[in-house]
Length: 123
Image (cartoon, rainbow, N blue to C red; front, side, top):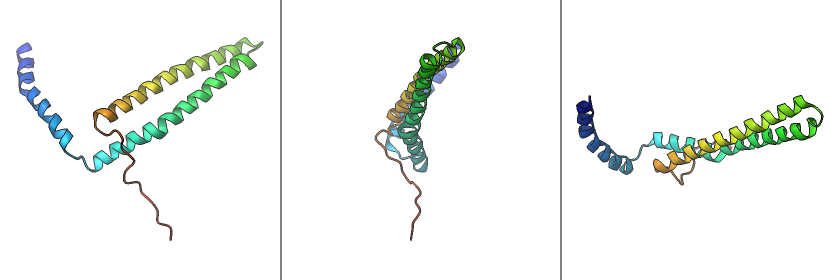
């Protein structure tokens, strides 16, 4: 088993090193434009929008816990649950944002702008 792995590693590793030079020197064309558009949109529009919604859920949970839940234990439990899930959502969103930025930096698509945006010519 180890001999087969060693054989594949010996054959495949030089190809991996050569692929890095090829990937950095070529242009992917329309596929690269698609990736740039997806990454820029998610990084500049989608993630901040989701963070804003998460913030509103967090504030609503605080409002339910302190204002509505003053004498009602059920409202307090509901508000506490919203606060906890909003915090978990923030952590997941920030992790996703980090992954998007990691992909952007590692693929060389950093500091890119939206490309080939369709427009309508108005007479």
